[in-house]
Length: 608
Image 1 (cartoon, helix red, strand yellow):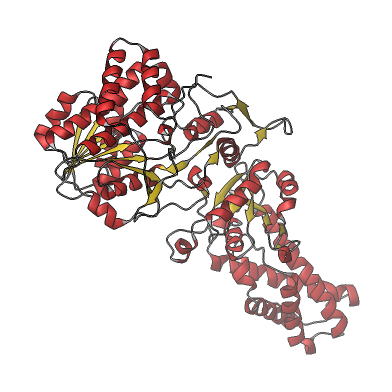
Image 2 (cartoon, helix red, strand yellow):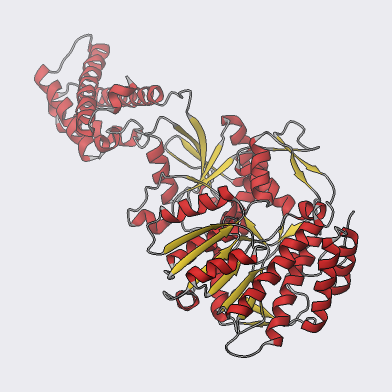
């Protein structure tokens, strides 16, 4: 029956409803007269006329435009009473003992009309196996429209609205009550609600984050409706709900790029080499730079699979740029020179590095060879062939590092600073580096790890409840790196404004709740996912920093700053690098750490 009714057109549904209404009104009038007089006192023609007048009145009151849907939630008793009274009063001259008959017939008609509608609606809305019980946050126009649309869909059952407007609390839309935030838990439990649709399209990021946090304890998945402008312009329907992603948890707006900086960073004459092109940042840099239309884009990575994936991704976007893929290591200077002999590189974005802190601590010598000596080889290549620009992708872990990875990245920064100070001529390579924190969703970061652990049912492993990190989306970080290259003058240490640091414990809680699970802890032993504190790993810091000192200057881009930091002269640095090469060749990891400690300011190797 559900399938049959759902396939009918609105016109047919209205005609069926009108036919049923006419029978009910005629029957109610006849039955009332039988009860009062023992027989029907009104002529059959008059009964038919009253039925037709009722249908006409209902149509004028808009009842059939509402009952044409299965939901039928906005039918009210008042409209039925008015419609029936109009019909009876029009033919009052035909009704015997009009007062008693009119009141009785009208009352019985309304009771029957409303009852069959709600019985029909209850049958049509009978939950199916895959029906989701949901609540809607926001009882404004967007929420009411969303509820109206969802009430017609068999996969949704709207149970309540949540709203912060006190004047709306206790009221309702049709059969759906409007409740306050403080009553959310009892209603969520009562109806076994699994999802909350956030139906406030104009809500800012901070307001959205506040509501997400408020819903966190209840173990529901928070969904959001499309932006208001997309709904108004017809680009997306209001019922196109989407899961709130980790980027929504940043609590700040994504930075829009400066198109002038992007255009000046990469020109149609440039041949761009990206090392580590298959990684998270390298891959995003590759994609965005390809769209800027350089003459050629060379992708270099040691991972065959990663290189294949990024080439396939860029090729699928129909970009007018020649793509060259090269499988190999940045430490292979002969390979880099061979690539240059064929394609004449003008710009290098150096993203290749060993970055995973615990893995680096277990492979210190290999990390020196790859991170430090690999970068040095590229710098010497740039000097030899007078490459126009060299941009190093650095990290906040380079500031007062507690691990070997951070120390090697700071030493790479110092190599670029030393070379820039040594060769300040205009025809030399412009070296710059960009320092930023974690990027959401990158390989090795906490977000994909937490997502995987949640999928497996937990627990989420966290090294400390107090640990904080800076976060930025991968596309935003790549855009800012490219724009910073247009601002480089030589030896620049650019620092990206990443907003406020985020507590990883809070991020873990939010991810659990956004996945529709509850947190298992001492106050909620029956929860779904536990957060297990394991203790800090070797070389791990509680707090990351972006600046070695407080001396930072703004640039023309509001989210890119330039750090003013002291560094070692090239003559001193050469000795350090030579000693590192000797220690690495001998496989002497402890000596490597000692040399780094003496060269990198603030380096305190923590093994916990």
